[in-house]
Image 1 (cartoon, rainbow, N blue to C red):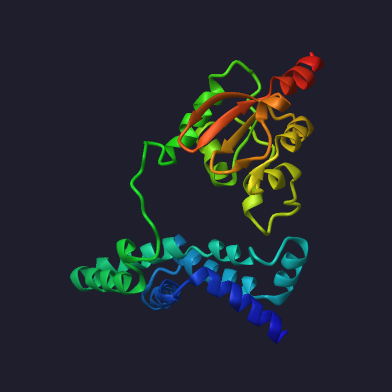
Image 2 (image 1 turned 180 degrees about the horizontal axis):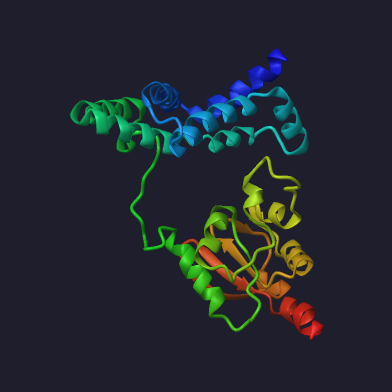
Length: 262
């Protein structure tokens, strides 16, 4: 039992970060319980009772055991999203400022400053957006090359670093693998096509085989990788390029798979 509680607290630590805002939230709940005169208010009921009961339920070892056996261990911390921390902080902060306008405002600002990091001096890297979509420009250019090409089936394989962006820009383009390849907790992440493109080199004989297996007409390559054979030898046609990437099309996939079905 003690080990299970310890594992749940480990998940809790993954959610809370420094812990300042979670402490502030529970202090706010105590403030709400003591100062609120109207116990029938929806905000009082939902924030106070809802948050307390949700926290109790999340820390029940039986729930943790069932979840980790049926789903996985690494995502249990997401249960803490169900606690309305943001709404609770905003509600209590508003009540505090309403009762103590100047001092309440200054106190909240001080706590927020002490509880966070200045983003421009933190370990995170911030870059100026290249376009209105706020995604790499190469993603837009590659997607446009595929969309304007003659083949009506827009199924393409992309390198790992582009996976999370493609369907943010164009939902008409499908892929033989997706963002599950980036998540170690995802069930059945093994994918032969993905494994083939993750090598330090491109084997177009193997890639052609994977294109046929997954009915994928387009293949996007990173020019920083070595080609151990010639794409044209295996039926690939280069239809465009941008930045560090080239787009290849295999007409045989469309002809042999899609046209043969009509």
